[in-house]
Length: 316
Image 1: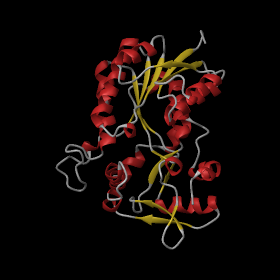
Image 2 (image 1 turned 90 degrees about the horizontal axis):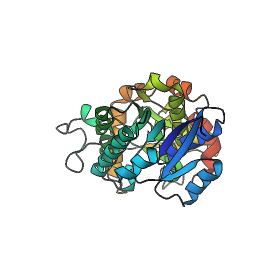
Image 3 (image 1 turned 180 degrees about the horizontal axis):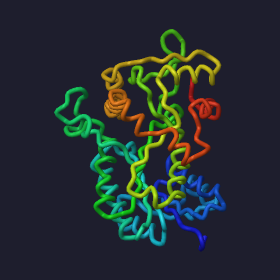
């Protein structure tokens, strides 16, 4: 490890961070070593990473000092937050600020901040096309990340800003798998109309991030968007039909209907999907498939991902 550049990965036991840790470990001759940063070094996932060869270090992104300590001696760092743990934009913004200041204090030479669009630039609070949530946001989990870009810029941290896409893994873990309707037939439900939705396998986010670290200084200061496919709801349903061997329909609902589904975060996600639908040209354009594939030659299409993962979905 002494002759390799250390990449510290916040959220190493999560979807994005775990993918990056494994990508670095899989490339034995790549010139990088990995430090997995997690709150609980004794968790099963942390122990799995240690067994694969990662250095596992404890830190909590609510505690700036612990992050600064965990970053010491690292060349690069990957930073990500998880809005869905707490549903609080203010908390997420504070965490991002902690990480940016810690990166500066530790002398990080290349950071990647996993971010999203500040939707105020497209849909101001005075715009009634979608409801304002929590008194001051349109898409809270987008806003919190996009508004936090400035922490890295203002601190002078050499940063690549990574725009991610809809996780296809949501069809396994987030309750979005095909479900049977009253007619007994399977369908996926999305409020995106006929618009294309950029999506990606969670593990491929980590592999693309590794590609950014390998490219190095040429990506610093840039915003890079990634996706594995741009597909309409109907096209995804067709891919499900092929993968599952039975018909899967696309149930197109309005954003208003989706916001009313009542599960935690439904309003936020309803606004998010509406933003992606209403600004399809921008949103897809910002997430180039060619750029993504240049960073990660193993990038999966949706059909390829389904071949590997359809059996994991809790379809009844």
